[in-house]
Image 1 (tube, rainbow, N blue to C red):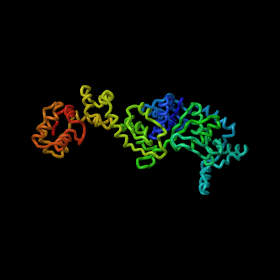
Image 2: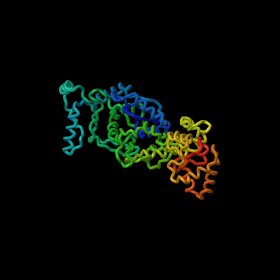
Image 3: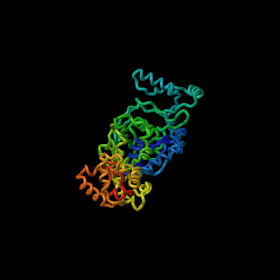
Image 4: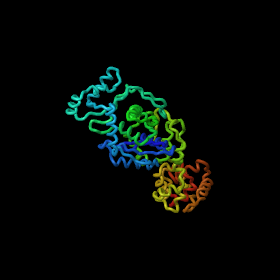
Length: 440
């Protein structure tokens, strides 16, 4: 069975980059009829917070990315300890005592000598007496995995054949000096224990993947199929920052972006297929193929979500919008006609209240009129209120006969006079919705 996972750290809210990883793994699982695990990488007790756990679940639920089960790394510490003991017994885990300052000095020295800043394995030369002395002086050391300095190769689902020389990579720290288990070990144990078959994540994890493949092998396991998607940039190719609020899913939701607009964009962005608005999650699943994505950095522009959101809303039937329309204050007996009139002119759900306010309260037709004399003449030819479906045609015919205007010169000033906008809903639908006579 295909098993995938999304493994966020509950140290903040999901941002647009996280979503790409979550969506790809969810789509792979659903297309194969497999299992999608939400795994909370919460081994950092100081930074992990329940409010972020709740926020992650809320964001995924908003998008419809349902999970089959939830796992928490904080409940699996015994398994990580067992794996660490197994690696120690195999001679693949060793204790190192360098301080951050000492490591930084080593890196700078290597760079100055034109060498890659790879950990020099000095800790392997310590005898037991030296280790005891350092523990007494500094406390427990960090535990590093001893890489087999050979080439690590795999067939990546997006990047193709990958080959990394392990000698060019520092032995990774798996357990910090304070005992905290780090991602590199915890993820390996979880992926093997949980039978994860496919892992899709950002290309910034390629080196992590190489070391994790060796750790899995040292623990007697094969590895999942890996695929590393490109990283997102801004519209001009600039780096995206996780800290920009506009990139968090909760802020996009607050801005009125519709889930299917966001998912439709992210399911194709960076692939060889054009972005197409999908009507359902099932359509997204059917059309997804991770091998069609490229390795080049992918430009993301939040503005691309706005026309897609408008198209999502325009396609919604009245029944799907009834609660929102009611919340905007529209009386139930007018709500279907209201939605029929404006559905092609709603950018976000927040626009509903503005349209209803216009229909309910009206506006001064002469305020801001580009041709006040013409509008004043037109106002004198208005049919009686309440207006019916034929009122717009009767009015424009009368104004045309009285002024000789036609076409855009006739219709545009009248539309602006009534709605304040140069374009919008069909005016024959608008007039019957006006709760007060047009005045100026």
